[in-house]
Length: 263
Length: 206
Image (cartoon, each protein chain N blue to C red):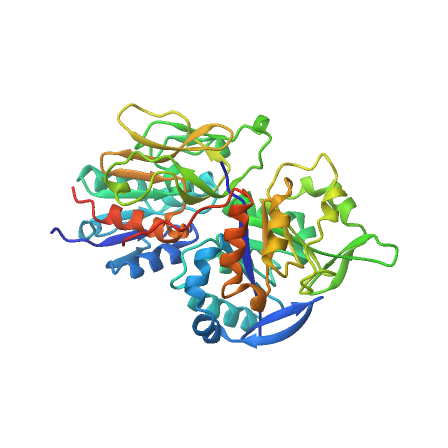
């Protein structure tokens, strides 16, 4: 049967990978730093997928080029599924990512452009579109949708879900801005509020995982297909390996990549 | 040892880079092919595929690939279709009813059955109950491979050797018919075990 997923997300801006806390970025290191210091090649053995996001408001063509160049360097020796996102406003932007290693693209600011999701899916298939929703509660504790690195896009998260069937997409990523980078754990409450008649599509949670226990907790939820963390310091190194082991101990159906392979 | 040179068919089907990188990793002489000329210089062809069946079938035809691919396999050379590239080896798909595949293998693709109440697309790692043929040597049965697709084929002709995967129902996740191979999953996205499968494919000499 299909396995659940542990996914790592890299946040990129101006030549550097960043830590994010409530969407405030802190520069960590460049692509060489990532490859060398974190032995990223071997770390990738413990994740099911990688997401690389260009996190910059209205990125220019140069920003995108620099991002793609570093992604290409990063993925040279990594043979896992990759999702690329950030700054996709039209079909060409999406194609640029697909032509540079993306198996999927993630849409955020453009999620309300129905025609764009249709255009992309006509060429690359519905399965290639991850709809990534950044949300934050307002003072009345209502979840609202934000985009373009934190600009409000829609007043009510759940109203959007009532009409999500109008869009072409393969999976949904829900990213909690409130939990982002805090290490306080994932927002599992948001799942309880989801409309019951939601189309069966993979559903991923992001934001807040600070230790392996949080990842296990998320994956245990029947509604959740995968958990995403972008926490460079808590999870690169041994954190992902530990999360994987702990998940398997907790009888979560994860892929076993531990078999010895002689090439 | 016979010569070994791989051609990757570039027909606007995405993720060529990953397949190219995996060939580099395996130290195999590789060329990305925009047109079907001089195929004689290749021992193996890879037909990748990220996209919709209809669009990709149209792209293949526009550059006159179908006849050239058929001539290539008729000479006993090895072909591997990946994901929609695998689907295109068959006759048709419900995804694009007016489009025709290469029809090298009999069978029609259908959408996964919604009555199993499972997410569609079938996305992520799943186990392959493999046929234990040469291409699977050194690979443990039920190893995990990466899938991302919404359509599946359940039945085909007798001359094929099949590997299967379960997602609500059993479907064909890998097919072999003499020198024609089709992989519904992405070996180039399936960690070391995927690279092993690609290496095994490249070591097949007919």
